[in-house]
Image (tube, rainbow, N blue to C red; front, side, top):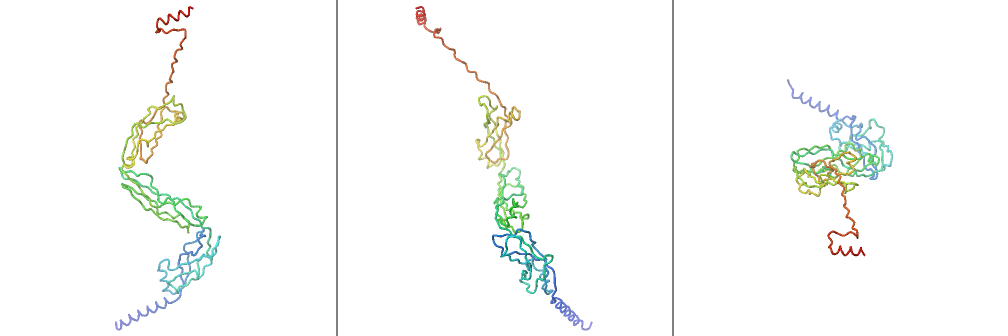
Length: 340
C-alpha cells in the first residue's frame, strides 16, 4: 500500500500517453457522405438518378476521424461542379478536389468505393403546371353538412426539372388526411407528397390550403313546381299528369335560405316513355344550388294522350229557304215574286 498514490498517477499518465500516441497515428476509415451538385446552368437539369450518398475512404488522425464520425451528416461532402456540363452523359472522376470537410483540414480523401467514376445524365430544363389532387376525406358532425367539394388551393403547382423526367408526371397528390365531426368552417394546411417525384425536380409550393365550408343541416319544401315534357312531340296531343310537383330539399342552412322556386327544374324527355316502355317516369331534377338531397312528390308522372277536339261545322243557308222567324209579310212578298 506504500506509494499507492504515485502508482495511480503513473497509471493515468501511461494511459494518457498511450491515448496520445494512438490518436496521433494516421489511419483510414470508410464514411458515407452526401453528393452535392453545384453551378449547373439554369437551362440544364439532371435527368438521371445519381446516388444521394456515396461511401468514400478518408485518412487522418484517429482523434479527427472519431470526431468526424460523430459530427453531423454535412460535416463532410463530395462537391461536383457542373458549370461546364453539356447535354448528354457526363462522366466525372472524383478526386481530392471534390472532398469538402471545412472543420477537419487534416482529413484527406483517398478513394470512392465501388465506383470508378460518377455518371450523370444532363437534359434540357423545362417547367410545367401540374394539377394538385387532394387525397383525404372530410366528414361533418351529425346535424351539419359540408358545402361543396373541398379542393386544394393552389389546384396546380409549377415544377421545374429535366424534360424527360417532367413528361412522366401527371399530378401531385397531397399527403393523406382525414377530418371528422366538423361543425364550423375551417382551412387545413396539407403538405404535398413529393415521394414519387424524380430527383432534382423543383416544385413551386410544398403546402396546399384546403378550405372546408360547414353549415347546419336544414330542410325546405317548394310546392307547385311545373314538370316539363321536353323533346319532339305534338303538344296538342300529349301532356303530363300531374303537371305540378312538390320538391323537398335538404342542405346547408345558408344555401337553402338563398334557394328560390325558379332554381328548381323538373324535366321528362318524351322519348324516354318509348325507350323504357313505361307509362310513368321519374323526372330529371336540376337544382341550381349545392344541396345535399331532394325528394319529389309524387315520384312518377304519367304520359296522357288528350282527346281530339272535333270542330262543329255551321249549316249552309239556301237563298230560297226562308227562316221560320221571318215576318209573314216578307214571306208573302217572296212567294208573289216567285209566282211571277
